[in-house]
Every structure is written in structure tokens, then in C-alpha cells.
Amino acid sequence: MSRRRSALTYQRHCERSEAIQNLAEGKVWIASSRSLSSGAHSRDPLAPRSDETYFRETIMPSSKIVALSLLLVSAPMVSAHAQTPLPDAIAAPGETAVLTAHAEGAQVYECKAGTDGKLSWAFREPIATLMVDGKTVGRHYAGPSWEYSDGSAVVGKVSGNAPGATANDISWLKLEVVSRRGSGVLGGVATVQRINTKGGKFEGACDKAGATHSAPYSADYVFLRKGSALSPSWRGNGRLARRRVFSRP
Image (cartoon, rainbow, N blue to C red; front, side, top):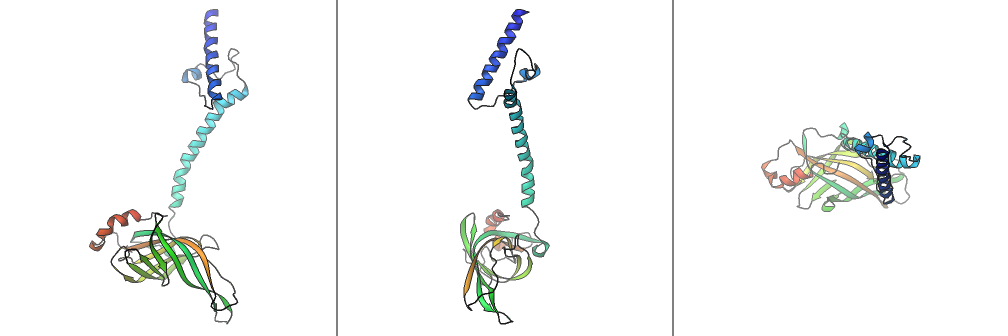
């Protein structure tokens, strides 16, 4: 009996020594299934352990596992939030996205007299660079017009709008294409949506007619065409079109 007890004491002494070494090296010690089944966490007088040691060996690893589980569970929620449907006022049911481009630029305002004769800032035109994956692919300018690097371009007319996320953000828009040029990427576009706007709003009184002010802004522009199938003239750009659909939510 005494010999068996001595062997057991020596075994537990070795386990404690290994645990202390692992903790000193910055490792997290987790008891083996054998230790757990034999009640290694109980207050056995042969294996005394302080509350601090118990916390470091048992509670801390468990808390890390719980934190990781919460992170994994929350990930789908973030994705679901990012895919929130667009406001009905700018939705385009039955249309297919051909290209989504990010814009960085300015909304230009001019000091003009209103119907009451008082001077105030009025929107004049946009000036922005269109980018996809950080590379310049076109430009956005007065019209409002969008021109792609292959020479194709469209001009739109506002047909719907929704408020921006904050009071400083310009509106989200739906624009109907009223004219187009070229047969490239934008050749068959029928609708343009402006979404995810940041900044760009500027208003109030001014004191010098003809003065201009540029308000920095960013937005995403989604270019859509009628129907879901690509027409023969678009097949050459099919790979681009499929890859770019909603590349920026």
C-alpha cells in the first residue's frame, strides 16, 4: 500500500512540475483525460494546488474557448447585416448588376441666388474617380455621367432617392439611364444606383455669387441592365460582369 502511494505521489509530482514548466514558457496547460478522470482538480492532500494555479490551468483555457465560440457565432450575423436589402425607393427588381465601382471625389457647390434673391450654396456637379479593387476604371462628372476606361459611358436622371446614413451624407439614389455611348462595359446599362454614401453634403448661406466649394465624398455605384441573361454583345465582358456583381456591399 505504501509503495503504491509513493508511486502515485511521484507521478503527480511529475505532472505538477511539467505544468509549472509549461506556464513559465507561456504555454497553457490542459489536463489530460486521464488526469480529469482521476479527479486531478479535486483538493487531494497529495496534490495541493493554490487557487491561482487552478484558475490559470482550468478557468483561463475555458474562457478562451467561450470567447472563440462567441466570435464564430457572431460572424454570420455580421455577414447578414452587410447584406441588408436596399430601400424600396432605389431598388431595381428584375435587373442584373453588371459592375459595382467605388467612387472617391467631391460634390461641387456654387454660391447662387435663390428664388428669394438670397445667396446660398447650390449643387453644381460631381467630380470623382471610379475604382474597382483599388484600380482606376473610370470617372464620374457633370450630367450626371459615368465613363468607363473602355470608352463606354452613360448619363442618368434621378428617379428615386433615400436618406444617407447621417445628416452629413448625401442621399442614396436610383438613376434611369437616358443616354449612352459605346458598346463596352456600360453599353447596356439601364439603371445606376448610388449607395453607401459618406460625406458630400454642404448647404447654407454664402456671400459671394459664383464662388465654389468642394465637399469630399465617397460612394458605391452599381450599374445594372434589364433582365438576367447576358446578350451576345456582352459575352466578351461576361467574366468581368459576373466577378464584379456586388463586389462592394
